[in-house]
Length: 265
Ligand SMILES: NC(=O)c1ccc[n+]([C@@H]2O[C@H](COP(=O)([O-])OP(=O)(O)OC[C@H]3O[C@@H](n4cnc5c(N)ncnc54)[C@H](OP(=O)(O)O)[C@@H]3O)[C@@H](O)[C@H]2O)c1
Image (tube, rainbow, N blue to C red; front, side, top):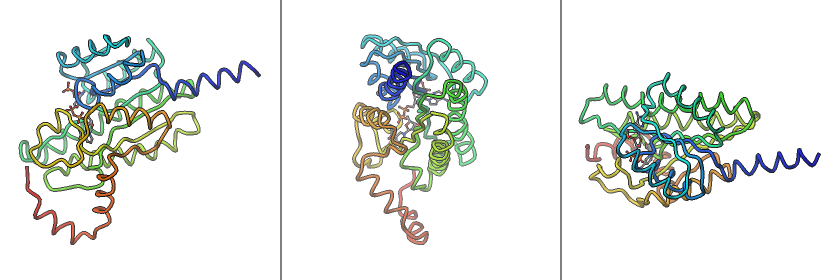
């Protein structure tokens, strides 16, 4: 009875204070800020990205903060190697928290609508699946763990030129919200994160206005705090949340009117 109590307390503690964390897309931006945030708590971190130089720099910074870091140059679009990598990480140290963060914003104006759609979905949707499914398989075997999927407030407001990005984020947002209920009975928590604008390599390329843009450290702090509370939908900052919900309520004719006046990238 007492032993059962301690096991329950320990299990709850691992969700509120995860010690073994896997983050995709940790070589810059929000993923980097999350890695640094959790590193401060002395976690074991498994980090991936495609750019070895940037990834190694983040891994070193996390190590300097006291984390035990394992980094891997890994493309989230590669289903087979993602499963092998995640299986290996979980065997090294059972994963408490897996954050499917890697994502791209590919511009239709640069590559055309077909390449933008296919390449964006390969990373932002299949890449999330390639992260989530192997992690869930491992967590199911012990009936505990937490999955976080980084979507976007863009999921709510598709706009000309960024349709593939918005659609990819809408897909993982919807999927993640439903998966939360599917996996709850098995003791696995699922959250969807919808950032507004956050400083990153992705947003550094934008030359349009980015109202209420947050620094990465602030985003990481808020995300970690709300994940610890097992919030299902983590959206910020609130003025952008209010704005996208308002835009979403508009009739399509009004959306068309606004769309025609939005400058294209
Ligand atoms: N910043 C924002 O305002 C904002 C708002 C809403 C949602 N988001 C989402 O937040 C996530 C992080 O983006 P960010 O803004 O922090 O941009 P970022 O600085 O460009 O970071 C993107 C990260 O994803 C990695 N990545 C991209 N494609 C990958 C692939 N195929 N395999 C493995 N890693 C890959 C990048 O690593 P490499 O460069 O090393 O490949 C990088 O570490 C994305 O899902 C993005 O859609 C961002």
